[in-house]
Length: 495
Image (cartoon, helix red, strand yellow):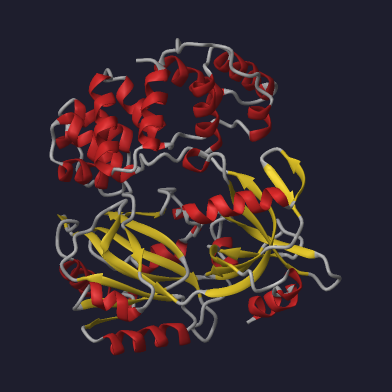
């Protein structure tokens, strides 16, 4: 199979709004792939490959494409990327550049653009894990549920795809001490809306901590992050907290730093624990909310209510505050209590929902009351994938005390297609200069930005950055001089 086959499929998927048509196109490619090509094609089309150590500066220096027809084999491309990953030590930068130049020399323009997006982490054409898993199932003639189940316990879509096409899905089982990708939640705008979608429901605090999965088999305890990194050595207090439990378990929860009064410390204090080894100065508190395996029995297919009952029976002191509710007013009151305790919101969970690892399942809803600021657009970056040709990633700033603007972060979230088209035209008219993919503009446009919090940051001149920022709307009724000030942002941060 040629790289060009993957590139043409990627383009077809990106151009097709229908989910079913995307699945058909992907499945068709996978049926034509050899066993060795399947995991590579899946990884490339999903836009999820291991880091190669190649920066954007190296990618920008590559020569233009000159080939008219595709000629390079997919596995030859993967072999070149493996050599890039293996290049370390003195002279590695020069070796990577030489390898990159040799790789890109025989490419067509379409192949070149695809690989640039893939290596830069900007490939988004609609072949995310959920769509790709269904395509794998269709190509293999296997029920989608069987693929999702294998993916749940393996956490490796390319490996699952290769096994599915080879009819080996049965080899994937939950294995204690091997982490699973966590189940994720969809959003709801309010507690009442969440109860309208799920009722009755389990309602829990949503704490602003670090998601972890805790495994135990006999004397060995392991703690993994949501990205499946093993951080056990950094968290002795977490290991101690679960030491009295059954001999085998797999638990899902959050870790958060609390002050003496039980209120959350700054998010950076929690995150700081994951950057340092040894006994911590700031201890983390463990909140558990799910149990996937207990005392030799897998629970991932059991209803949420049964899993939590097993958790509460074995780890009651660590279980997150929770209530089963069926009245919107009661859920709103529970949300008020969570916010009053300093936490960021609530989770609303269907009592009959299974654990859908790696998926943003409809059985879990998160409800948060977001903060908003009116900020000024300082620059924008050209988009990738389906946003190619649009100015997408906005640089946002608050008014400084001297009349300048202080950058607080970037976001490409919350934008409709109509907004992307409008802002691309409008920002182009305000352009003052360009640097690479960034277009700097006169600071005239004001946007209302929703965000979940403010964190300390050395990356930006104001020493602060917005967390999970997304655009709500452009404020045509406001001038840049009416935007929020850096002082107002600092007051929110201090509060």
